[in-house]
Length: 482
Ligand code: ADP
Ligand code: MG
Ligand code: ZN
Image (cartoon, rainbow, N blue to C red; front, side):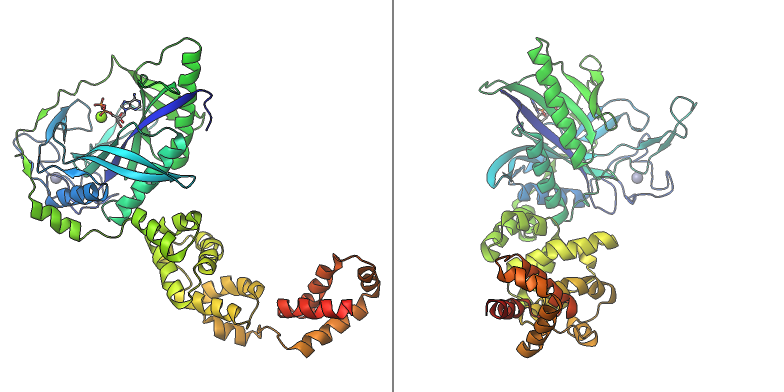
């Protein structure tokens, strides 16, 4: 991205819905899509006198993420009330953390063109989500709205980065890696459409070389990587144009309009909420001891950035391949299971990234439900390697192997697809073809080397693709040059 003498400065605030069974301060279910207001109780409805009780699982998850992102886990943290009025917030305040959050000062490394870049994490804190307003009609014609409190008090982690991100591309890389970490840690499903993983972006620009930050705007509720990248790019350019024309960026919240591809002011600084944070008097400070942290540390899985480093070393694959494989934990396991049976990592990776991913997409399946087992893929690759079938045939039967689940060996036998590696059989077909195309033979002998491919194609057609290509090439050349 070239912003001609300027650079963007971006800090991201990510909200991740946690995969707990129950809510942050009560026992109500967090399940998505239930009958409106069926997952509610006096606490999450904000009724007077109802008291919050902290869900321990949420603390476990926050520590898990904090450790994965190299944060300090504060032995003492406190909850705070963030006060504002909105109908989806029945208490009139949201319980969050402000001063003394649970995790601080971590980092996440990303790679841009093979180069490492460290993005510092300022803080991670726990908070409750608000309910949801349902506008039955279009807003203009409706005289009322409905409110659903099922989501009220569903637990979230907010992950706040330092303003270390410089381009929309870096922002997307950071978000993808962060999302992968959450999924690997099994604390969030990462579903962006359902809003389980959403992001607010703070954006400013400055002249390259300046050390001070410019005034920032905030883009709210971005929930697809594509639009995050587009809206950041738009916003950076908008601010640069403004400054070049002698204007000033004003601190405000803006919304991205997907259809028009532009950002609009939603509210300015004057209308900004004054949250009047204060410590939550109904909850004790949260004290975490070393044992709690160490127990969680022991249970951490291999994280995506660790798996990437291991794959690079162990399998000697390009980073491009590794990032695709590791982006999905099941795909990474699929790869490793196949390599165990067919120890040629690059070949396996190529087949996964082209043939397998294509079949998954066509069948709308995820890697964990792959329609061909690692054992069958390894068997297929072995058949190709030992010359039983050609690569071409292998690719041709791949979809059928996926839809039937058949053993590759069996299918190849049943369909008579075994490669012809018998010299005399191939030589015989070559003679037939050369006799059929005397004009082309003459042209080849007169120097038109390109025709070799034509003859190969004709023999392949005649043998239904079963001639061993290496052998065919050798024999054909020998015969023509004779
Ligand atoms: P506040 O307390 O007003 O919410 P924070 O200091 O917590 O502000 O920052 C919120 C987010 O804004 C963080 O992600 C931070 O990195 C980012 N940020 C802060 N200053 C800037 C800036 N000048 N340009 C871009 N992002 C910024
Ligand atoms: Mg903030
Ligand atoms: Zn409840």
